[in-house]
Length: 264
Length: 295
Ligand SMILES: Nc1ncnc2c1ncn2[C@@H]1O[C@H](COP(=O)(O)OP(=O)(O)OP(=O)(O)O)[C@@H](O)[C@H]1O
Ligand SMILES: [Mg+2]
Image 1: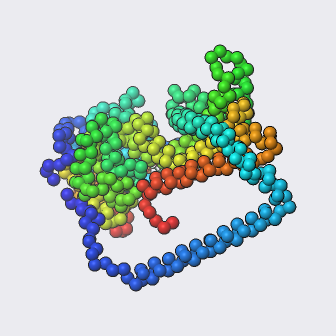
Image 2 (image 1 turned 90 degrees about the vertical axis):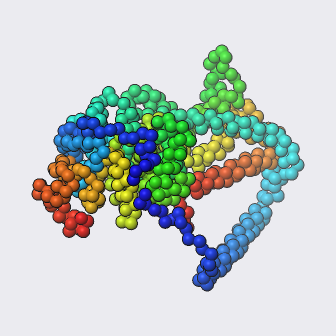
């Protein structure tokens, strides 16, 4: 993909030395359960990081912390070098720069597809209605959803809803996109259409962190793979390294369990 | 773009002929509807006949008819009752509007988070707890007779205004609870989605939570409005002449209860369209966002 609606007029900021997202010794607990322990992570600009790991290993929690939907107990998170876990920071301003796509889509059921997508550009970024809608329609076109703009979310298939959710998240041109198991609720057939969209975003240079159980996809699209185990990033490296030559026994166990289940 | 949407290219369907199976199914459905209709008509007729016979054959029917269903008194009462009704309707319109706005405001105040808002939250909660528990009639008595007794300068003694004020106090508490239930019924993931788009908590409330909450509570809200409409009659406690009081004046002068029946039927006649309107709104809102189905 060469020319595109997404980056037109506002190309992604050029890469600098500073990673877009950096976690330093992040710790998160719920009551007595330690969900994230001493997590460190760097996500360079225009790169894709895949978070893999068993259910309950803390992938969603990590993403929620990065978007300030949860407070961390200890450690720090930096967005473009700025500490966002500092209590003095304007949290709304931080969230404006980060897009999130949820497993359950979380579209607004009382709004049409178009209104779902233009809500944040219009209300938060003060883009005039005409322009917001034109851009939203271009985005829908590209995601194969032309003609669905006036539809309510409940009348779309799961794959279509998830693509709308992605459109909604990128409509504000976020600096960083967080995707939490965005294909987990979908039929295998619909998974493909959503993954294709994510691949396109990568080609455009979107910086992404993706929690996923789609190992083939992670291997294919991710520049960096992190294996989470009980709240710890046990292993971190290129996709080929982590999948091809895992250093940790637990990573090998996890991957071989997946292979047995026919998912790798 | 790699994604394509098959549903956008619907195949034209020019040669379709309904199969015999479909025709038979439709014939069966029509027959079933006719049968159900016949059964309903028969059972309604029988029920009505039994009721009429029971009432008309009762020993006191003659006297009851003269005291409750007397055409002469009905004609006499109708214009007076209608005059009084105008007051009920005005009260309904003004109090209804005040109650909806104030109830929504209080419900939103109760959802504010953080220690800064503690006093606001506490006051709103105390208000709702108190006025939801206080019987309406006592609230009206306090307002209509208590406020003038204070002899505050510049404060009205008008029983209609004071009675309306009491109605607003009580009904705002009910309606605030309805709105709050609606707000709490919106799933937290909706809030998370809105906040993650960068909306402030006020914007989230305004554009995401409230529209969904209000839709869900339209039926119970209209229910409260119907009750409010009936309770507007209580302002007659302070001497204001509404439909019920107008009927009472004639009834106690002539020892005939027909005016009450007239007033009652008029109230029912106003309520029915209001209820149908509620159903229509609810159906329309559901139809717009949900998929159809047979259940
Ligand atoms: N709000 C919460 N309160 C208490 N415990 C929580 C809460 N949210 C998550 N947890 C716990 O934190 C742990 C990590 O959860 P998380 O949702 O991050 O896992 P995950 O890796 O995303 O799993 P999955 O692959 O199933 O989505 C789990 O043990 C979970 O029970
Ligand atoms: Mg998860």
